[in-house]
Length: 458
Image (tube, rainbow, N blue to C red; front, side, top):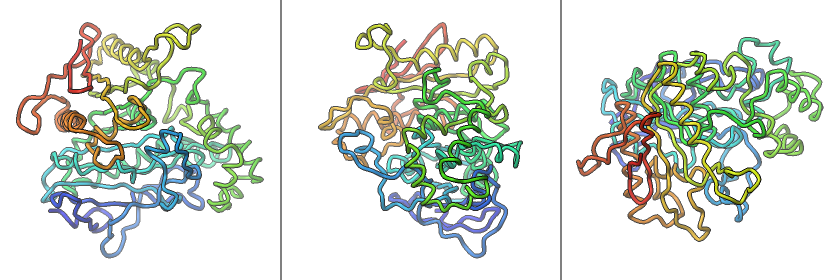
């Protein structure tokens, strides 16, 4: 097993995972840490080599985010609540790697994962993101921490003046910087730098779409989008602000915290700044204020409009959603009436534009409808499918049974086949063929329904 690897920055030592055939490397820095004058600055790629061997034994501090709390009536607190004892800090720009490789020259496919959380919360140490089960299938798994909320997406005229080429969207730039680190270093872990798939869920899925829109630049070949939105409705928290609108939000925040300029704001210690942020409105205001900004440099506007203009080069894609998320009434005057799933409409529009522009790549569409157990009768709520794609059900408190484990195994196999070849089809763990998952097109809108089994549907 590869327990020690040699990267461009020095040696890194990992530890055996629960399955000793897998080695995990945690908390590897991919950029200079964004502290001091690098707060509210585009990531600076790592330059300094370390001496000796980096002991990559534990996760780094998680990105600064809202003060942890626990509300037993909040489903997301029950499922994903942040442990208040987990270290939190600005020195969070790290990746984690799980590899099954025995040697550095194996050239295994790579899966690069971006967590969600509305660009406000999230971290790689969440239990569902353990990469071991995917790594068992012959894939090198990478998960990335990136800056969130006010630290990842705050704008200000002084920030723009300081670095007009990269004035905003530091969280997205962190992701891109980490991708480049993977491209440059993953061969040391037995990965293939020319066979990288990126994936994400919710805001992570939206981030994947932003990365596709910006361009692959030879870094990744295909993508996976779980519950990510192609666009944000005008009345949505996530409607993109212009750079000028976002800068005014930054001016307002600096006024609130009593900072006369950027230097004074950077000098405020992070605990005081986080306390001021809570006073300013905390998570509720943050999600309406600090999300990706249309800076016309990295984020250039509506995904569909850019695709229609030929400004996006699409890649092979798996995308889909759960049945109970983002539901909207079919009749606006009857909010309790029959609902529809707007993401399904987005998939159809996406495919129509691919066909219109002649840039057709394969799109594999799914709907997750697996019965979810628990005293709270949660339905297929937003993000519950993550346990299944990563095959980490055993880490969850919910009393999953054999059926759920069987579906999870198949879902993970589909995902891994796609990461390897760009096609999710192949064999199950017992060497029997998986049910065929046909690509979606306007003429044949096939999709895969994951419920008590994997069921292809036209």
